[in-house]
Length: 316
Image 1 (cartoon, one colour):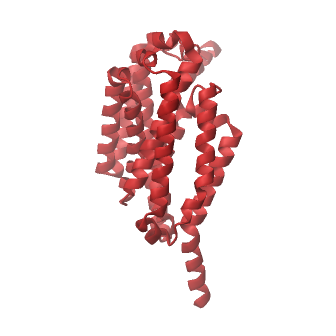
Image 2 (cartoon, helix red, strand yellow; image 1 turned 90 degrees about the vertical axis):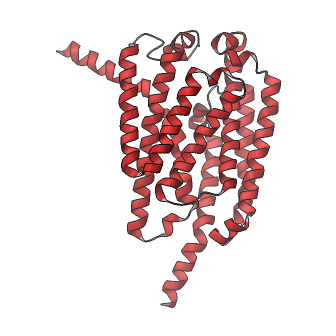
């Protein structure tokens, strides 16, 4: 009995590893629209409902992403076996069967679509588009240089748009472009990290890595980082942003934006971290910069509204 229990526990752990829950942090992009639309200043019942919807969208995307991770691992299991880290993944190491993995992926996909449909038909369409795009990436597009990174960035844009759709608010075009540019920067960072880690074996692991060069990726990182910062500044200075927030003070958070992007780029190009997620989760200076930026943004976005409310209460 005890042996059966241990085997069942190990199987459960392998299936959990297959879902890559640590990568669900990527789905935090769905909360952007909730924060920057100032929905948290609405009536309490409406605010709680919006928060619940966005949390639901987060879980829908997490399940959808896990389904796609599993599918990608099935497709890449032979290539992963030569990677120094990915060879320990459950499928590459042979600890989970292909049939079992596909069943898990199908279950996650069905649950994701069912949950999204319960929240919003538009959200279900976006989740379906995300899964369709990711399947195309797994079977073909990841073998096309530059297009592979563009597809990854579009996947993040779909997350941000989903957060807006599920609560019925519009999202600034500048914010969409900024998200795309920032996530394109992250995608190129991932490729740079893979080349730094694999070196001579990079092309054997992924064909497109043989077409990228450290110099080319450094140039791409420069271009996308500048584009992301420029779009953020245009968003911060846009007249619609001032109308919504009552201020353009978001522009003064630019030094923190630059610090986070430059540190991310420096650590990636040095090969300190091969995976952007690992950098985000483990680099304390980067985390501190991001935390300060988030807190400042929340203070700027909601500060005036809260002040007006307190003033109204005082007059009453």
